[in-house]
Length: 46
Image (tube, rainbow, N blue to C red; front, side):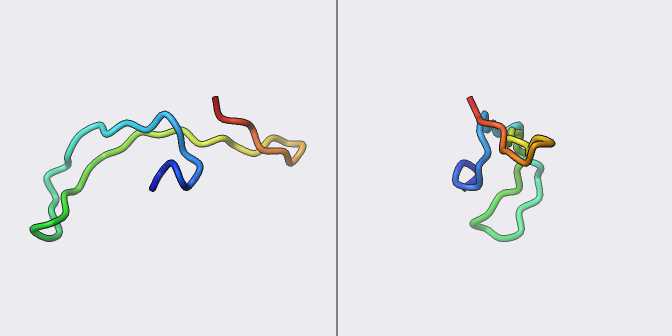
């Protein structure tokens, strides 16, 4: 899902211990997303 939203270099850092249901687990992610430069163009991801 994160990749489809334009993020890259995605890593799961850890579970956070908050489980909102028996089938879901809370987690902390790290990811990068290209920004928009002053020219209005989008930076490219590696």
